[in-house]
Amino acid sequence: MQAKSWGLIGVVSLGILGVGIAIGQSRPTMMGQSARHSGMMSHGSSATKLVATKTASHKLALPPLLKPDQSNAQSVAYTVVAQSGTMAFKAGRKTRTLGYNGNYLGPVLQVKQGQTVTITTKNDLSEATSFHWHGAVVPGKVDGGPHEPVAAGATKRVKFKVTQPAATLWFHPHVMGSTAKQVYQGLAGLIYVSDTASQKLKLPHDYGKDDFPVIIQDRQFDAQNQLNYDKAYSSDGTTGPTLLMNGTLNPYINVKTKLVRLRLVNGSNARHYQLTLSNQQAMQQIADDGGLLAKPVAVKKLALAPGERAEVVVDTTKLAAGQPLAVMVGKQAVLNLRLAKHRQTSGRLPANLSSLPTPKTEGAQQQSLTFSGMGHMVAINGKTYSAKRIDLTAKVGQPQVWTLKNAQGMMSGRSHPFHLHGVQFRILSIDGQQPPANERGWKDTVDLKSGQSVKIAFTFKNRGIYMYHCHNLEHEEQGMMGQIKVS
Ligand SMILES: [Cu+2]
Image (tube, rainbow, N blue to C red):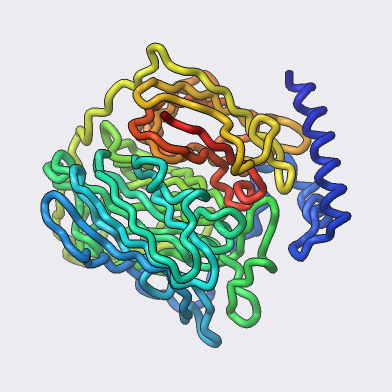
């Protein structure tokens, strides 16, 4: 089986390579890409090396909490506008950017379980975009995938009921051909789902005081301080040497409480992170992509693939004021926690967080998806995305068990963060083993490392056409995406 797929990948890749050379490309050519990365095939990524920012420390920017147009217990309405702007990220020239209701990134939309949400989406850009609610359990027609573009200057209204539990979700564009570029230039916002069960837990929840969103993105600024996507572009995942947290270079937060909650979102196009604390202390992970874990899980090194979220609580009780503490990526401090002398007790970490149901697998429909390749040669089950082709079908209410494989081979070695729209899933196994404790909650994105086989279980609750794809945004653009019709 493996030998067969190797052969197939070889043939397909040669074909595409030929086309790439023949038609020429404004972006770096396949030849350039494969030459540059050929020595790194055994690694999980081709990411550029991160370089510590030399600029002064800045207070972490906080996305504004978006004021609803209307709100009551049963419903809430928001207006979200995609627009262009400029940002002074660093000294010198301002950077041209994109943002939602602002210059860069977007606001936080707060919704409650049980509420009906209406979102008026407005596109003030000069090109089409879409508004995808990543992680939201919603009908296909309001999911904001490639089938629901909003033309330049147009407005579109979506309405759905929030049925899922408390979680940190996010939203970003999902149009064919410009998703990666629009995200890179700044289009990404947050959705906080709350519910009554989690409110009773008294977890830190004072926004910007003991509860901080942290959107992690890597970028390449050119000599004119611009985010030149075409110049930074890599077909195997666009990365940059500079980290931005909520759009802030070299950020810090003032910690005035003993417990600090960080809602970590990997909003990068392609970079994977391994986050640690500078004092080697464990973080207490309380939630993954789609909601609270059953119990807090102590995590010393937290892996976050593109698209994934993790909520952690950092306990500073035993640390002295002024003691240096930072969230680290490798040897680089990426978020400094400045500890105040008198830190209040805010909330407490309960022993139990949520009662996660056992995943339903009885009578499940089985599917097997194999992710292969790198750069321009990526494919799922040997195919690249076609808007006209429905790859899979499923029924509402029927349990699904999918086996996701990252093919090992010469044209592989890449991680593929798998993301499925419209539903939250659970990981049954990773290479036949139980998933680690911090990956046993609700997920909508799971990293498939080279050679890995991951089994997931879920049940669609809504009808529609949904995307599943690699959340390395350049892989997605190159067709590492398929669609499932749920009826
Ligand atoms: Cu991929």
